[in-house]
Image 1 (cartoon, rainbow over the protein chains, first blue to last red):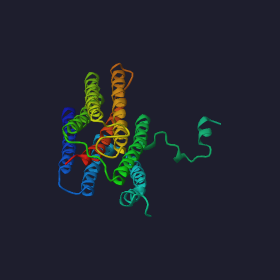
Image 2 (cartoon, rainbow over the protein chains, first blue to last red):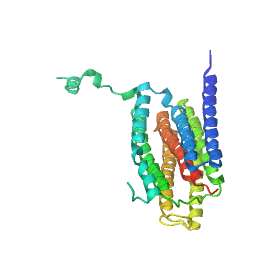
Image 3 (cartoon, rainbow over the protein chains, first blue to last red):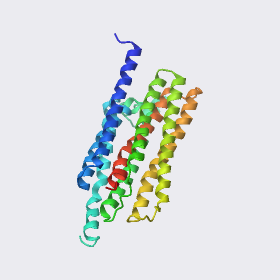
Image 4 (cartoon, rainbow over the protein chains, first blue to last red):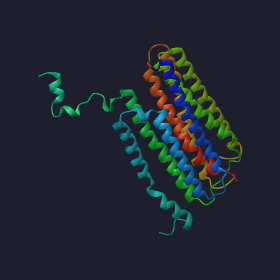
Length: 104
Length: 206
């Protein structure tokens, strides 16, 4: 049978591990910044690391993982849907850089 | 006709749950605010990315990662101290929860000071909202908008932490209130996880 003190210790140990994971992921981004790769590759790698970092923070630091599954689904599905909907204009930025906005 | 009958008119009983998702109202309100604020930051970062992608002479003015690394470390650590504060509050240790909440606020203040120092350095090098010595003038507007919005959130968070911490210590607020302000603080930290790579690290001078 675990005591309250042991449960508290266990909880803090979990948070410490999550914190160290996030710190390591943040460090990884700094390593990626000094890699000799193209800007688009660098962007993709950094975005991947950021998404993992944010996911871990939301699930464990913000305790979304321990909320009701319905709430978790509502937050995740709604947020991802709107965030993806914002991405429709990227092709236009390539048009701007490749032909100064004058080609279709 | 009873009050319950009036309330039920036109609705099935299943539609009337008093606590959606079985979480406290303040916490639900904070989550809804966080979702809305996520859209604000996402829109800013998408606009920033669009400008960066579509502008050929985008400046890369950052020579050192030391300052941004220290700022990142402080903000991430402040999330841990916030967690300790929330856990301590839930155990009913008022003095401990207040102390950890104030340590979190102090981390926020240090972060803001470092951020403002960095801004002043860039302004000193000739960067304004509309021009800079390194390339397109759009960089200043984009940089100050994104980082300015973030530092505004940090400063609001510091104020909220101090107010909620003091009121919790004085017995007017409960552990749940510390948890709600903690949610906001973690969100501010989360946004920084995207600002650092896209605004700083992708603009490092190699």
